[in-house]
Image 1: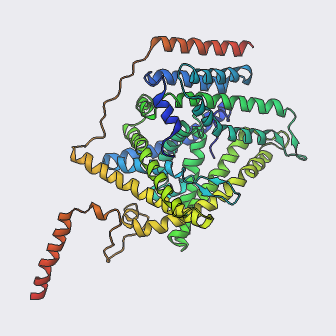
Image 2: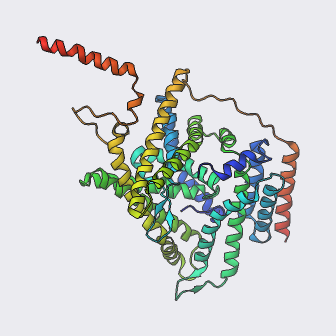
Image 3: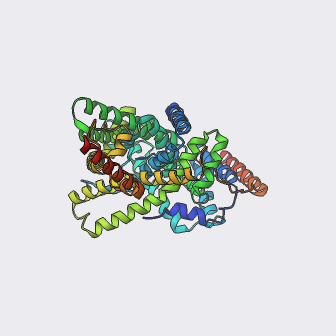
Length: 243
Length: 258
């Protein structure tokens, strides 16, 4: 693993150049609807809307979206099954197990799909500046931005070192695997510090005194998109409440 | 183990966010203060965040046959202290939600409470206690990482039990269920992560002693000048080396005259 499939999808998405605030409005609205509206038909509609928007207009590859959904699905399945098994007075299903599990799965899958719509259309570097509006201090946003930028270098180091270890039988057997994992973590940690120090030296040489200033990319908000989002969310709420 | 998006009812999601907020805000204040005093810390803290994220990509072979991923919160607490970890952990959780689809946005508060607050504090307490009782650095690291993992897992299970109580036995029954189901993966992981920590620190104490001393994990050796770590050596310019040699060279005859 060198890259992150969701991040790649976000950079390649057809919605990449849309304003992050617009996308936050849409996905945030869907997340809230998925949680607050009744599972039937609210969550089902939210889930369908999120998947349709991602695979349709946003042109996220279906393979990436499907693979990404698998991770939360495993937790949701195990969690929902555990929640509806009754343990008091012998093991068995809770009285309304199917309905309860359905609701839980509905809310969770719809919510995960809505978050994934945001994740697969908006790169992290577009979202972080948006945190300014939430009054997150600049220093924190800068640390998060450095984290994002350094991630990929470290992931590449990680996979390269692991490949080298595997080629030298470093993962043959549990004992060797642990030893390799420890050395791998140590190597990545020292590399991350070393890289931070070298970056610092480079930036200091260029006169960095008060934070890393970068020109933000201007991504204008679209009135049509906002209007369509509000209309769609309103329709979702109306249908769910009336049904 | 992250709670997936939409798995907690709205009241719980909001409640846990409010519970985690003071710790995260405190962490943010520490980071802001640190960055104001030492602007160069931005990069080091960013590197620490990236390392915590990347650590979860390391596979650990598990006793149950599957492989699991370390959480790194205990390690972060030992290296960077729990307040900073509350903020870095939350940032990492946000990244995991948006880059790996682990966890969620409405459950970010609950996940931050278990992984960025309870885990690091419990792990750090275990680490300090073990060191004070004479367990040494490696013993402390093992205890810190294993306890951080266990505390995170227990907190998450209790959060889930509170949100979804058992139909007949209520919270207690649900807690037993969730603790039992996730024990299969989480207890071997806690032991595995403790072992990883020991192996990691064994390498670090040899290769990155100055870094550990700077972070306050190891006390600097009082008189013996420590050897340069492997990745520090190339950072010394040739001039430095020449100056050192010149200094030594000029010392020698001077010393000889005495």
